[in-house]
Image (spheres, rainbow, N blue to C red):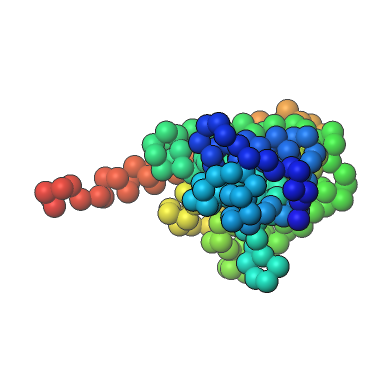
Length: 249
């Protein structure tokens, strides 16, 4: 449990907003750290001098944004998150759902950040990290040869996560993960046919990365993702054309 002195009554702004701001301030100052448990709803309300409904809203808001995570059970409660892309992915997904960001926006951003990851990874990646990417390529190439190519969107994006990890920049990794998670959801609605040519492209990108040729590797990836984007747009447009009108015609 965190020190009681960290939480004092708040009197300005809406209670739950002030609680969220206070928690974030304490994270920035180091008073709160990943894994620390926050007081429960009733205790938060008492310490901050707000109603329990406001305390509940604060905890929910912090959870949605990825700052805290809820754990169930006897030792459960709300804990400062150990990091991850969940909050960012949810924000991007919400923007898509509210028509504030399009499929094209998501794919453009994802392409750019993956190419940034490649350019960073080329000089920074270890041979062990390159080998991990190779194993992922080999695994899916074997599945294609056996006629068991995976339609699991999660396996489709693991390749990009491995590249982002090799960039050795936690913010780049978080953004790649978040955009890939949104992309995974989009891909699931299309249910694409497995395409063995993808493994050829991935092998080419990895070979260029091993040569530390950042520009050529990122160019090859950008061209591949451009074709993926065109495919998704085409499938989306086909679906819209098949959708019946309000009159049923």
